[in-house]
Length: 356
Ligand SMILES: *Cc1c(COP(=O)(O)O)cnc(C)c1O
Image (cartoon, rainbow, N blue to C red; front, side, top):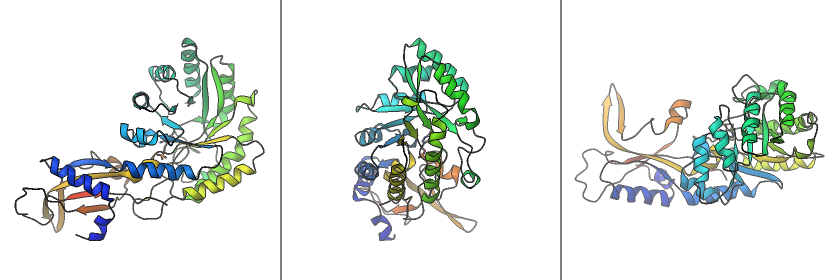
């Protein structure tokens, strides 16, 4: 064992692992969340937000009830993308604003969201605008919407983007924006509140993110000019996508991004209310995945640790090729017999290093 590695686990997490091991005779497989650290991280994120900039949490990163309850007092609201997530925010004991994005919304999801008083719906296609118009009218509701744009980006920005600036199922092609705006304006049951762009996923470079925000703010007056009654158009939701470096201590420079945005907004004659909606960057740092080693063996010259749990529980690293750091935590339970092999019975924990 390397003591310095175990030292990287907060005492609260280490104690929790020991308590779980004592309470459960079967080998462990668990997610452990450091809710104190999550609260501190949310406060840290908020402390850099410029005046008039809002922070929503995209709950697809982790929608466990305790996570939502811990974040609820500190974020401006939740962003959701499915019917199941409407239930999850509705079950949160602290009532928060929620906004609804994503292609492929069911009629029943749209209707449920409006009955649960969704703050804004981010419309993702012309057909969705027509469906929403009909459903909102049937509920006698005047629904605030943002149009999600898949923009035509300048070359240097379009490269390396994953969700926009190229053909994707997300958002409305910027070329059809005037048509989308006209559809919303014709609708008696929808109010256009602004625009939404979520162009990037897992961006670890703050300079690229700064350039994206600069470009959105440059386009803002152009998009607004397409609207006949622009008074209600006040929001620019710039999505999430701040990445997490699973290998190194250095993380995405959130304070730097916020400082840059603050300066940039000062130079805007008529700035929008900017809204961020990150997911991963909010919760990744508080989570730990544990699996207990069941067996250790040699096969064709390599060593293998056979564990309780695996990629069916912790899918993203395997699916996206992330290499998470692993910490080996030696534990022995009361009543354990003599150890047959050095590592058997110990626990492996995946960790992320926090920014700041
Ligand atoms: C996934 C998603 C987010 C959050 O993305 P992260 O990479 O987790 O920050 C925000 N908005 C929308 C529309 C999304 O689909």
